[in-house]
Image (cartoon, rainbow, N blue to C red; front, side, top):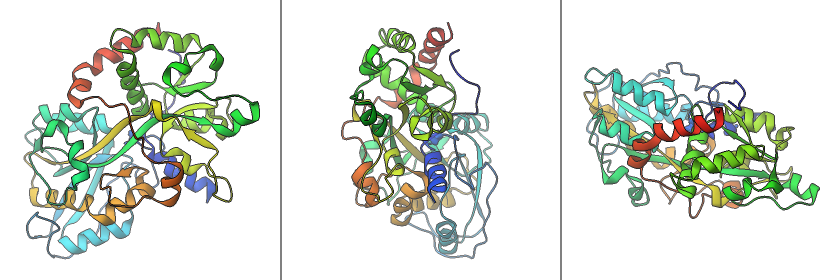
Length: 382
């Protein structure tokens, strides 16, 4: 295997927390994480979070708050400002208890294993790579939130109502534009460019078996090269000196030239350039390559057999509220699904979502994911 041994790859959330802390910062993720757990922000370490609450009315169409706990299981890059959680608890009368077993895949596996006797009421962070597995496993209850914005309807899984889209991100190759300018070279623009000898030994990507962005890139290369051609494409990448590591944080903070490494092309996110601004904030020193962007969507759902389904619906309504949607870019480095919510200025200028991302139906990804991973392993580990 052409990779280093590091902890699990993750989402853009880590970029939010880590770079913010460095400049004052991972997944997709999602995370995610990856979404996903790579470089997870402070406070999303997989521990249980509890707050105090008083009784009150619930949000949206979820019925009257009755107090007590509502158990949320999420990928381990889930984090929101304390004041938002406190406001939710004060308004609804529920106490939010958050547990994080791992990345999006781990969350889905836990739901499937506990089917019939779940410990969670509501789930957040299932992405489109695992959405069909959760739906087909019948571990989610149908729920259509009255807070669902029209802009999110196109993100529903196969038109169903078991999963509610909350946020999204775009996994893309990023380039260190300052490095290319200093070298007097033109950066690549497409996946195919990455296999060109002109860009030999310049790129670092992540293992799709253990990295959410890595899996997104694998899906993107299948979409671009076809099921009969993606293995050959990956062989050409290896022959061209692409480096494969396990985690997004290693790729970005160890190998990427922006962080002092030797690779000016890295697999990251369309939002990443918002965190690499010049001192005066007038420009970004990195750029995402829009032709390589693969769309990731993160969902929430009411767990089938939940002890507190009313509380679960209240959480989903809250995640779609303007306050939470507005907080997503800074808190979890993801785009809100509500397009009426304004992005931060730096995002709008330097890190907008891809206009025409690579997308693949969730059911198709779920049907073929393990076969694609096995083929990738044969190429990269052979």
